[in-house]
Picture 1 (tube, rainbow, N blue to C red):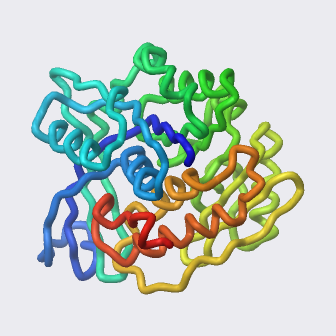
Picture 2 (cartoon, rainbow, N blue to C red; picture 1 turned 180 degrees about the vertical axis):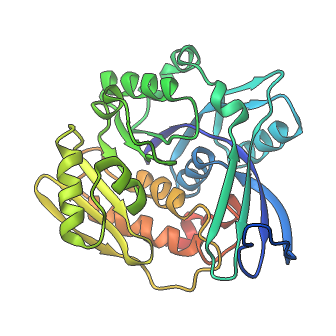
Amino acid sequence: MNKVTVIGSINLDRTIRVKEMAKPGETIHASEVFSAGGGKGANQAVAAKRSGAKTAFIGAVGNDDAGKTMRELLGYEEIQLDGIAELDKVATGQAYIVVDEKGENSIMIHAGANGKITPEHVVEHADLIKESDFVIAQFESDLASTIKAFEVAHQAGVKTILNPAPAMRTVPEELLKTTDVIAPNETETEILTGIKVVDEESMRKAAAKLHALGIKVVLITIGSKGSFYSMDGQSGIVPAFKVKAVDTTAAGDTFIGALSTVLKPDFSNLVEAITYGNKASSLTVQRFGAQPSIPYKHELN
């Protein structure tokens, strides 16, 4: 069983379901409104834990009702919460999600406490990182803290997985040189490399650019088509499972969290781990919400 530590975002999600997205200036009726646990970091941690990984989290919430709710939800999952700070005078991160009948979503995020994690806080909980097989991070929380976490992992020989979302045009070199696996989607890949992803050849070219930065494994998630991988001169597409999507929220997070649970630190079972991640995300998109939609190990088996 892998030990996975996630550094990143914790949000309380507020989701609105609509028939179709509103146009600028248009008022429409919603068919449903609900709240649930979210945040890319927390989603990935929940996905890893539900797939069987021993999971810890480094992050922050506010000392407010939303923060208490999120700690309770993550605690219920039996995720180790020692690395989650409760901060005064700052709100817990929140996301506002609109989902249409096709399952497509539009997301607006208020970072709140996620932006207040510090490198010093990471150092205080460095043992969580050093004891891990994988450390996962995204771009929804303080960047300097993510860099510090990856540096600690790199020095300890712990493998790192970077989900570069939301996308940044310039990712600091000190983060990339301590990244072992990078997992962008098609849009994020284009922003990172300048290469528009249209086919397998363009994905290989984009991967080559990322490998040139010192990253060993490149995974490009391509929605309903599956996932492209590139490592040690080998590449290919692992197809997705064909399902009817009702809500794509947390699909990518589920993929990364589930994959990290079964992936060997030497990456020798990469294709099998991608297949497992694809299977997990195929269940997620058939359900509504972020964390409520993430499957458990027994469902995947």
